[in-house]
Structure formats: structure tokens, C-alpha cells
Length: 227
Image 1 (cartoon, rainbow, N blue to C red):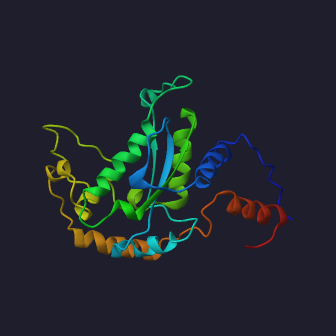
Image 2: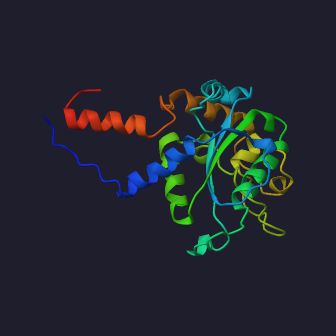
Image 3: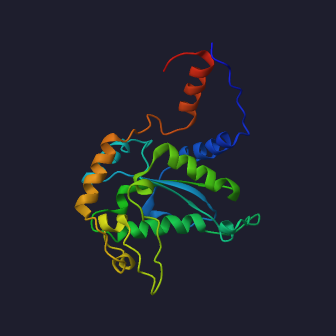
């Protein structure tokens, strides 16, 4: 029998998994019709539309419990990036504002529709936000976090468009500020082919949750039973 591994609820990975699991159990909301709310935290966005390169993702997300987020992100309140902790009862709308920005980005494109996107979000104490986000990205490898960068970018501002246009904006053109950036060597067609090849080999988790897979893994280790 393999050596038993004691469960430590305070292990960083387990603490982060509890935050991520709490998000994955949250209710789904249409991305384009959220009503204002207070709080900062983490979120996952799911695609269910007919854009051909994302067909495999869309197929995985047609049920009541979608399993393949296209993007995972976080919204930190003012001061969070400098190591500050928002005061108790903060009135930040950081999470709502971030999701609203994403809906606006989608709405500017010619080949995506906000009606094809759903999201889950979780208001989280500041200290746990980066850990929860990083574990979700590691588990799902969302394509807009990994292969197609730029969805979460902001307008760099007047006179600061010397950088290359994000890959997201090449594939989903429409944001006016991105059109001012320098052109990329890749075309939309080339990126589409990359997406198709990537999704063909991407291993999508059988369960959208953490604990199902963790419990099975612990059982295999502690009982010396093969998968």
C-alpha cells in the first residue's frame, strides 16, 4: 500500500481550491445583462455560440453546468495591486465593472455576440483573489488566457499605441483603441488555424469542479488503486 498522505486544509493549494470551487458552484449569469453590484473577486466566462474556431468549447458548454471557460479573470479593488487590503464594507464595484468591460469588448466585434456568453463570479476577500484565479487558469487553460492574449487589455492611452495589436483583436477586430496599435505579423486566418489545432489536443476536464478530481486522486494514492 502506498504511504497515506494526510490532508492539510490550510495548505495553500487546498485553500485556493476551496475558493475556486466556490466560484464553480455559483449561478450562471448572462454576461451582457448584469446588474450593478459591489465587491471584488474572481470570475469565469463561458462561450456557447457558433464561431467556428470555438466549436469544441461551445459544445462543452451547452448544458446547465458548463465545463470549459474561455476566460478566467480577477478584479482587485483600488490599492490591491500595491498590496493594500480594502477596508471592511468597501463599496468597490471592481468585479461588476470588469465584467461590464468584457461585455463591451465582445459587443464591438463583428464575429461574437454578448448573447453567447455566460459568466460566474465570486466576491472574495482580497488576499485570496490571485490564488483562486491562478488555480482556475492552471486547471482549465482558458484559450483567452493562454493562446489568444489581449481580451483583458485596456486602451494604453493617447500616444501609447506603439505596441503590437493584441492577438485577440486580430481575431475579433472592433475595439477602436486596438486599431491604433501596430499591426501583427499574424493574420486572423492564421490564428484561427492555431485555435483549431490547440483545441483538438486540449484536454478538457471531465468535471468542472475541483473536489471530484481531487478526491479520486487522493483515493488512488491512499488505497493504491489505479485510475
